Amino acid sequence: MSKVLVIGAGGVGSVAVHKMAMNPGIFSDIHLASRTRSKCDAIAESVRQRTGVAVATYAIDAEDVPALTALIRQIGPKLVVNLALPYQDLTIMDACLAAGVDYMDTANYEPKDVARFEYRWQWEYQDRFREAGLMALLGSGFDPGVTSVFAMWLKKHKLKTIRTLDILDCNGGDHGQAFATNFNPEINIREVTAPARHWLNGAWVETPAMTIRENFDFEGVGPKNMYLMYHEELESLARFIPEMERARFWMTFGDAYINHLTVLQNVGMTRIDPVIYNGQEIIPLQFLKAVLPEPASLGPTTHGKTNIGDIATGEALDGSGEKTFYVYNICDHEDAFHETGNQAVSYTTGVPAMIGAAMMLTGAWRGEGVFNMEQFDPDPFMAMLNAQGLPWQVKELAGPLEF
Image 1 (tube, rainbow, N blue to C red):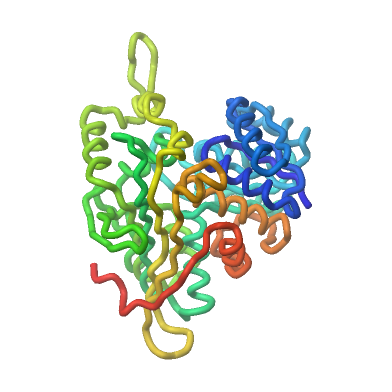
Image 2 (cartoon, rainbow, N blue to C red; image 1 turned 180 degrees about the horizontal axis):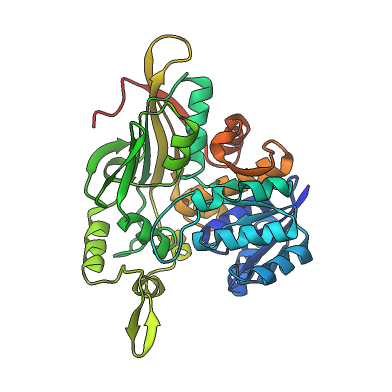
């Protein structure tokens, strides 16, 4: 039984804290902090009503290292779970080092002034965490997170090698809004508008954003257009599966989303550099975030399913030649909302965040230094996915994707 501090009170934080409360044998004492304490209080009240578990709440600026360090020391958690913005990863890691506490997050660091997703900044903390005898686990969401665990499970149980890997992320939900994002709008739009990159024969190939499109028939959802993008798990997968010749990431978007985003880009509303408005400096994308629907508010109106998984091709473990396997999860938006009050995009990230924390707290995954999901045994994580609301399935395909 362990005390944990969660930082971040968005939809993912809400799901993670609800699921922690549903596992009191692992999470005996839950604390939740965010810049806006009222958001924490709302989550705590929902948790109390649904589970009877009390969650302590705090207001904190995650970029204020001394204040955050003081809060961590005051609470004395065994683990800090960072579910805040990717910009804040390094300051929270600094505070964990200062306070002598393990660290976990769901997305890699990116600087505010450029939409560049790299593990480099966090991997550079390796020696500091190792010398302090602490553990940092990076990217324990769904993608990144579960998708990496899926790949390693396939390599452990089905494939001796992985030659090609395609990660497919489909959100088939309908929230009824003309335009909205299913997670933090600022992060979502920065991610979508950044140049696409994929791994090919030992090097990165970069293409303009949203220019490569294919159609795929997703079980539980149906045919959807999906676009080649860059996602940070490609970087760690290329590092930890060195034989991999090609790795790609695909995400589905509807025509209405693409049309709205194109217009917003054309008029400058997705810019991340400052502009002067009425004598004040503002960031257009941050202003856009303020007027778009809050993702956490979409739960009651979102219907449909998500389907996220890996298609991997390589040499079969049983010596039967080259084979292709597809491992994936289907999550229902309404089921997720019924259980935690949040839609499935938050659920599919928040549940793996709880599981990653459980892996660390129970000792199933341990080490000193900075680690990615690929470095640990996938089996206990995969077992908890089945038990905690994200059941997965695997099937053999006739061959790799034809495109």
